[in-house]
Length: 110
Image 1 (cartoon, rainbow, N blue to C red):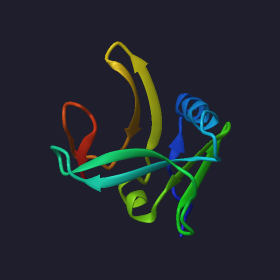
Image 2: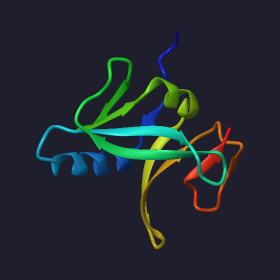
Image 3: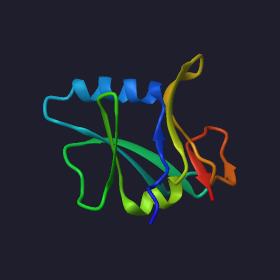
Image 4: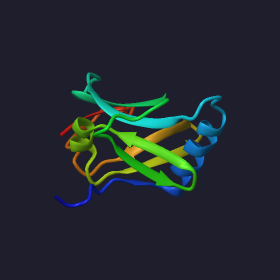
């Protein structure tokens, strides 16, 4: 099996590392996909204290991100990014697998 192709942008790594430094206990940034939203699926971002044995762990510039195997199937080939503009600051997944997305950008279908 080839290495999963999911990456972290420099902006996302910097912001995640900042978030993890504010936690009292060692933390990881979990990216997952769950059913729901107006397009069928939505991304979820959480700070967690540990990873599961089958999680993919991404590391860049002090950021540690975990993705479970089921969610990885939905985000394969994606880039996790962070934007900070007039409409607000948010994590964004640039996902080549998405066939439709809602206007708010948090839910999608594949």
